[in-house]
Length: 354
Image (tube, rainbow, N blue to C red):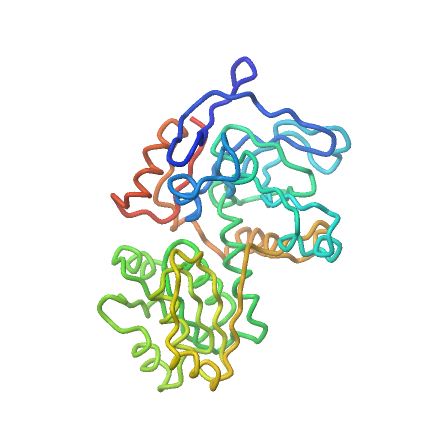
């Protein structure tokens, strides 16, 4: 920090990302300022930066982060400078029907750190105290920076209301979120987890994480594999975690009677469903479940975020093996371009202040 300025990756327009020095954000009453430890790059950040853009420019992206409280505003008694924290990036309006029910991710008029306002590809972020959770002892900032995607993965599984104990779950897409879904599925007690992807390195990482039933969809037909592994019945739960047309068709075609399909991946293109597949879904009385973001509680209830942090603290959930890159802000543009161009294998990429 020098002369009230901080280092940040600033998006000035689609594809126009520049390392710059911008003013350190000031805090108001009820807010805290967090010095960033690490910020993960979400799969959604790549199109946001290089093709779709943010809601306005200039913007600092980055919404998966953990850090240390630098300063507390007036009316903040719960935290003190030096506390390690994570930040729920969705800032809800507090006035709509969804907010009144505590369903903040369904808010009608929300702000969002890293897309609608400045996020954590920077040295500092300001957020309301209500959006802050202290990181448990023994959990590193590298792990804690993955709380947001791990909560999204957990939320996707929690959309399925029946127990997964003893069931077969098929996951289509083995990126970081797909692998986190697989981890949660195993923790919760599924009998069989099937993982599909077309990138051999992702499948090798899944095997290193202890998953045996991993398949390359470019070589083995996923619906046939799922039927083979389930005595021809299909999976109890299929989770689409890639957002590409093929994986939608695989997930919808691999589910058994009275099973569930969870749509988790952001769609990259239109998906056309054959009439025969729709008929099959109808006859099998399949439940189609959307999922977005994660549940967060202001009152400290057992939400997705606290469950993730508790699982990390107890050693039940180990996300360290997912980290393939830790990069300072000064090299941030290079690593984001690498992710866009897929020049090398990556799973979870963390950016930190230089």
